Image (tube, rainbow, N blue to C red; front, side, top):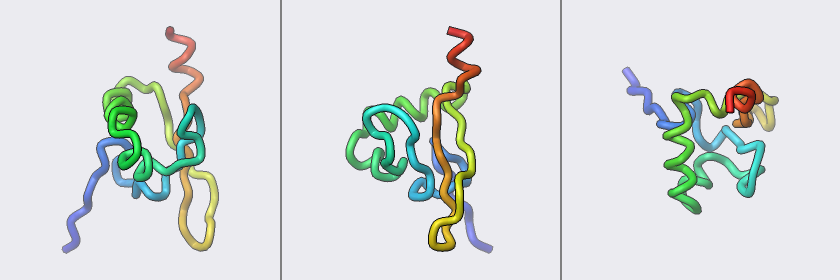
Length: 79
């Protein structure tokens, strides 16, 4: 049985398939962000349980599922 590796940011979704949809890293995958800006990646981990961002399925590209990580507008209302 294969063991599922969970991402601290994306859960069961592959970090290479989740693209940031805001900020200075917009358009980069979570995997790329982990490599180029570890501090920002850590902030994503910290924000995960608070509901600051959400992930939604975007489309199939070359047979791969692509997802967008975006700021949750409902979380912004609470601030």
